[in-house]
Amino acid sequence: MHRVISLGILALILVSGCIDLIYKPGPGSSQNLISCDFFTDITSRDACFKEKAITEKDASVCEKIELQATKDECWSGVSGAKGEVLLCLNISSALLKGTCFDAQAAALTKTNSCVSLSDAGKLSECHFYAARATENEVLCEKAGVQKDQCYHDVALRIPSTQTCLGIADITLRDNCLHDAAILTKEGAVCDQ
Image 1 (tube, rainbow, N blue to C red):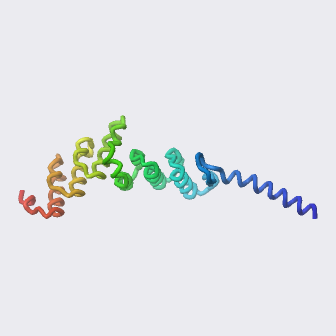
Image 2: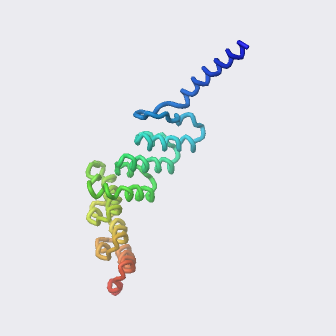
Image 3: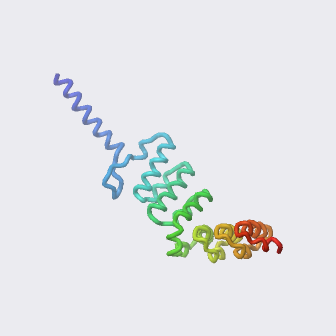
């Protein structure tokens, strides 16, 4: 009988030691989170890192994710959780990047988050997405190589045929004018 009790106590000690390897508290968190390194499956581990990053509002955890789609979701989630729109620029998918900026359009209209960027490429990209999200065509002037596409996208979001006139590429401008004329029901634009 003592042998069974001794084995039971030994098992409890071993199990409690193993639990510490699986569960550890997150920084600044009062609740225990699963250590994502415990998972051997990439999909599960990446999903764990994504949830951990969003819960703890820690963008650095997104860097540990291997699958690009999950990493993009992580950047978007942390950006929303922290209210830091510039984190959206780390997203590789143009569609999700646009969605990320759109979700924070209200914050973008209050502040010009892009001005803090020193990298010219990131600055232009930020202005492109900020212009689309806030429907502010003035920002398209700062969108660099995406300037024409910026005017096009903003024109169709507003909609406004006038905004199409900022497009330098004739084919894109004509397509923009056509599509915006349909949206605004300005048939006279088609006669030009």
